[in-house]
Amino acid sequence: MSQLLKSNFLGTLKKLSEYLPSELQTSNARYLNAHTTNDLLLSYFEIGKQKSQFSEEEKQTIREVLPASLDNITAGIQYSFTDLTSENLVTAQTLRSGLQFFVDNFKDCSLVKSEGLSADKFDSLLKLKEVDELTTSIVHWKESFANPLASYDSLPDLGGVPATHNWW
Image (tube, rainbow, N blue to C red; front, side, top):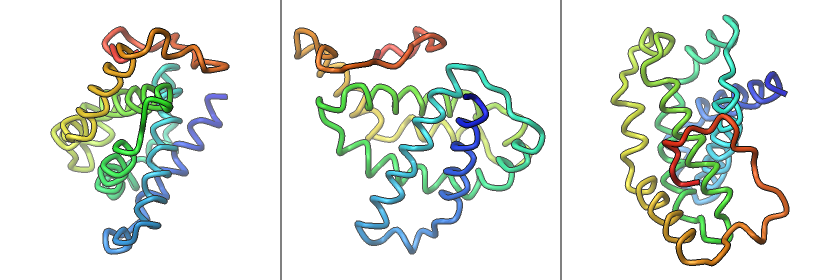
């Protein structure tokens, strides 16, 4: 399972590195970028929980594509996080945790520092107003409904999710 998740993560990261900012001017392109960003964060949620390690070949791929992906990840978050509603509570929580794992695991990583990326570049993802608004909305949705998760047939396994992910 871990290898499939890592393959999905690397594939979506590559895809995000290929989008040019000039191509993200149409709503269809922004939607596609947002959907790809969501796929990236959903797969990284599982990778982060499992504390999966990357092989040397996978690390090389990350070195090559991550710098070109970060601006598109930012744009994807800005577009997709604003569309989430209380009906998407578990998806919102999973995306938020996926983002947190992504930032925590890469911001101080020598793998990305060697590519000239600073921790500030990753921390800036968490400082986006859309991330703050989503986190606030998650708390509000949880407080506004007697049992907000009752309508879900299955919930993600939260083993490996630290208590600092307090939006769960």
